[in-house]
Image (cartoon, rainbow, N blue to C red):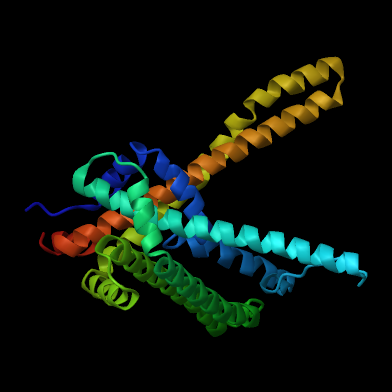
Length: 321
């Protein structure tokens, strides 16, 4: 049997996402839970570095200011706002969790049959495992927050250090947190795949995820790095999208310059921002669906056939000369 390659992983993930546009919507909703791999950690580390340099660490504990006088109407208003906020949070969590499970289920079925299907079946399968999917995501978030907190303490202590050994400790802690976050994400996605695809419980799914990762450690890490490089292309695409999004605004700005009308200039700017946001929403949904589908394909191939490490293949080829 011909061994599957990374090129097949990326091409199959492209096929399932490109030919099933409904997955873009699932990818958009599930992105609220964060991406798997390095994507979910780089932005947070960058933010921590920025606030550490400025000495502001209250981003870990957001503050809210309410104009509450203490009378009955203010109390009812606060309760009403809190109720609306909690309802929206619960709704979006439900939507994100269910969309994530449906995305995994749909991608798995597509890889097996290459046939289109209605979203009702994968959606129902996701609802069946809702609490298990939710639990895995909560555990993943908690572990990532704890690891970031440890790195934050290290960063705050060593960031202004001019000592070479302390700088080495800071660099080492950054490497450790990156690999730890990737490990947490890989175990999480493998566990979710085992939950949704194989119908296992949380404990059995976690054990299976660990077995697959331990047998294919290098492959999993290499795919994580490969998808990280694709994130660079995503950033480039968003930047290019901003250029094209503001092209129609030029007409409004030209008309505003000719007529000396500020409203037209504001309208053009608003149109450009709106088109750019629409583009970001579309590409975010597509990219999250694509990366999730790639992990699903990888899980299914590792489970049955296995994928050889390209790094080991490279060194074998190099030393065999």
